[in-house]
Every structure is written in C-alpha cells, then in structure tokens.
Length: 496
Image (cartoon, rainbow, N blue to C red; front, side, top):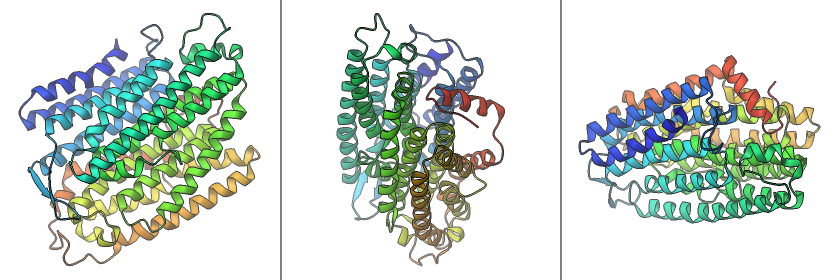
C-alpha cells in the first residue's frame, strides 16, 4: 500500500494542478505533494514493505537509497519553485542574450509536469521488472520535456527536441537489450523477467546473449545517464531549463538511469560476467571524465559548466562501479553527494541568472557583494563539487581512489587523479572570479537591489542541501551506512 501511494501521490497532485485555477493554491499543492512524498519515502525506507504487483515493484536498499535522494531534491525544488514561479509570473520577459521576447508556459502545465516527473522517477526507482523499468524510464522523458521547454525560446525548443530524439534512440537500444535478456533466459525454464529472479537464476542464462544485452543497456541507459560520448543532449537541456528543473535533471533523473545500469550489472556479476561489465564501465567512466574536462576548460556559460560537471560525475559513478569492491560502495555514496551538491549549485545558478540577467561567466562578477548568500553558496558548492574536504564528495571520491589502488588499477587511479585536478583548476578559473571579481556597473542589481536572488525560498534550499553534504563528510549515519552496504552488495561491491 505504501509503495503504491508513493507513485499515486504525485500523479494525483498532477491532476489537481491542472484543475486548480489559483496560482497560490497550486503552489501550496506542490509543496504539500513534495512533503507527502518525502514522508511516505521515510516510512517505506523504515518499514521496507515487501514486493507488490507480483514482484514488479519493491523497495530494498538500492531502491531506498535513490528514492531518498529523489524525494529530498524534489522538496528543495518545490520550495525554490514558489519564489521562482512568482518571479516568472509576468507574461513576457526580455530574452537574456538577443533582446527578443518570449512567453512562459502556463504555470498549471509546469506544476503538473513537475509532479508527473516525480511520479515517473519514483516508478523507475521502484521498478524491478525489465519491461516496467523501460516504460517508466521513457515516462520520465515525456514528463520532463515540457519542463525543458518552459521558456518557449528557440534555444529551449532545440534543447527539448535534442533531448527527446537522443534519449528516444537510447531507450530504443535499451529495449533491444531487454529482448536479448529474454533470449538469454531461454532454456532456463519458467523465469520472471524481474531482476531478483534473473539474479537468482543468472548461472542458467546464456552468456553471449547476456553480454549483448548488457552492452545495449549500458549504451541505452547510459545515454539517459549522460555518459560520454552519449551525453549530447545533456548540456543543452541542463543549460536551457529553469534552474529548479536543471537541479532535478542532474541530481535525480541521471540517477534513475544509473540505477538501471546497476541492476543489470548485478545480473552480470551473478552470472560470472562481472569482468566484462566492469571493463566497459571503467572505459566509459574515464572517457566521460576526459571529455568533461575538455569542455569545462574556458567554458563561458556557467550553466553549461555545471552540465559538463554532471557528465564528469556520471563518469566517476561509472568508474567506481566498474572498479568494484570498495570503489563500488564509494560510487553509491558519491551518487548521494553529487545529487545534493549539484542541485544546490543549479539553484544558485538560477539566483545568479535572476541577479545578473546573463549566463555568461565573464559578465557575472562580484556575486559576494551583489548577492552575498548566493555568492557564498556558489563558492561552497564549487569546493564541494570538486571534492574538497570536508564535504562528502571528498570522502566518496577518496573511497573510489582507495578501491582503484587496492584493486591494482594504479594506472586508472593516476588518470582519475589527473582528470580531477584538471577539472578543479578549470572550474576555479571560471567560478572564483564570478564571486570575487568586480561587478560590472551596468549589471542589474549593481545598486545593491538583488532581492529576487536573495529571497528565503531561493537561498534556504541550497543552504540545506550543502549543509547535508557537509555533514556527510564528517559523519555518516548508521542507517545510511547500512543502506549503502546493502546496495553495494547487489552489484558485487563493498562498503567499508
């Protein structure tokens, strides 16, 4: 019952959002649905109800880990949305770079799609059946596309179409991977196409077809995850979306695709094909980090900078799982930390956009003076996302490094450290002047009026997310350590 309610609450909220006419009431509904989903997530993770719908839906350690991340981020995004939607309530706005006018999408549609997006992500996380997981993943694409197109500008239109086309091609390859799993299961007797059943009978699966299925799913779901060279939709979608949508795309949606790859990796490990899966993930992880480092260097658009940072961190997750052992546990912990910090940074980027009316880093200077709270979050978020102590990202990245060295992957560890160093320097060159540089005299808010960027609803979500990331760098609660340990075991990993 609790599991079904988790999916039902956001879907019911989406229907109500379309029926309610008053903007204020709709915003209260959004906050209420987010809070209700968070409360139910806590109950599900505490009680761990058994599988439902014939084992197609369930909430174990792996599901609870990603469910908690998604729910927490949605609460932060919902609080931020209250001020954002009020600020965007005017019917027209000057285009940031070209001086043209565009019209925002109706708020009712935006709120409904936000809640549908939450429902689709929840279904994806709870899905334990191959087919249902595929359907839920496609539903996240359809629910989030109108969110990317919110501003109805030609750049957001291009980003939306690229998102739909590229992710649809990827999901089609993942569907072919599903078919190959069915073929691999021939001769194994009656077998439900759920991941627990496949893992239990993995030794009876045909290895050639299972390898082909794993490759197709890594390519298919890796497209949605943003692994290079399959990442092409991600920079445009993240940079053109409203900042709260970017926070959810980067902090929650990418994790859903990562979870799909984790599930299939667990099946391969149980079938004795862990080496094949891990080599592929290591290669894609290093390629993603390398490509992200290349594009982060001298990146002029700070939202695209954060988008390429997401490509980097998806590479880190893939690398950690590929290395296995302690590194796999570190990758799961890194998924938690990256989600918290990247969501905080995207929300801060939205505040900078409100204060400066530009996404160009060169035209955004003196944030600590113009919008001090946002400037503080921007600097703290930069330190956190680049793995500086004492944030949780430092612990998770160090754990992955430890796993690489202990596993004898010294060359991989060296490349990993080199890429992290390059990215740190490249991001510092862009981020630090934005906070400490001299604010341009012509910048909006140069007279000290930066209230839209410094409203409580715009600042508190980012501060709360960063505070949690900081706390996780100093202390990991017992329940989280237990959840990480159980989740790591499903992919043949360890939690130290």
